[in-house]
Image (cartoon, rainbow, N blue to C red; front, side):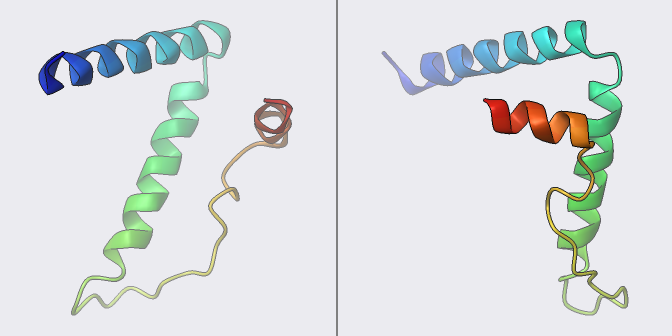
Length: 74
């Protein structure tokens, strides 16, 4: 199997998992976008010449308690 086919299959699997989550939770995409934005801001603060201070936050600070319990339940 070529690398391109493997990548395409992984993309299809990831997309189908995302669709399952979105069917079950209307706000999942909003929380994911918020988390991605916070992660990008954190990483961009490390750029040379960046004037923004880096906040010491944990990666899970943005996750709701109900989501945290669901993630821990596996």
